Image 1: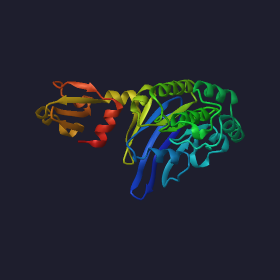
Image 2: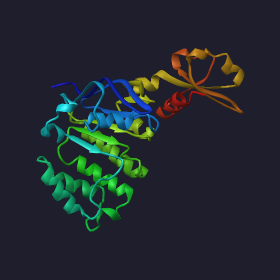
Image 3: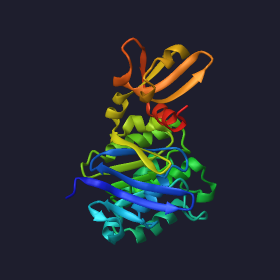
Image 4: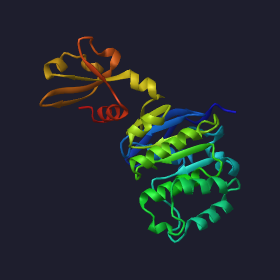
Length: 281
């Protein structure tokens, strides 16, 4: 069995006005990876390529040990997917949704689905069109978790949920990967969520991979320097990744090892690493 749930090697996809360029990263089994980047950076393109919704121009993609273009029905059932929009028929109730999915998935787990319905407090008597955005996302996540998937793929799936429910769902993801064959890929703008649960982070900007590594190593590598403008000018400018100049001075992102000892530094979280890298100045 391969050690990786997802592997991208030198993958390129060209559109008018956008290129996903030579992308490579790998998600080890038993781990959670956060996929971060601004809108239009290429996150959804990566997910669509991985699921073979979109055809790549070049490179290799493997999912659960198999080429993404050769996934069997059995392997596809092992992938649970949640997009940022719900695709359930608006006039269905939960029992009808379950009946449809039980006919689609050979591995459908009725007991697991009932448990998630209870845990998420989803109403049995309402049709889907009367669900809030948060309720629709919880239904999508429950369905993705109820057919014995080994890989969960989530594209901005927690963005419509309140902090308490998001925290509850993150705990479910952590429980999910207790099985070392289970893995999760989460594309999200909510970087604080990713810091709580992710083992790996892949950061994409304008179609290029900026970094892809263990989350803890990324957070250890970078630091934020706060200083006056004169002090900022004395920093090694080739080591400055991004800077914000304001009336009180400067705030700069740098590799921690490149900061002179006389400067005070603060830890850099994923949000600051992303913002400073994208905006530069």
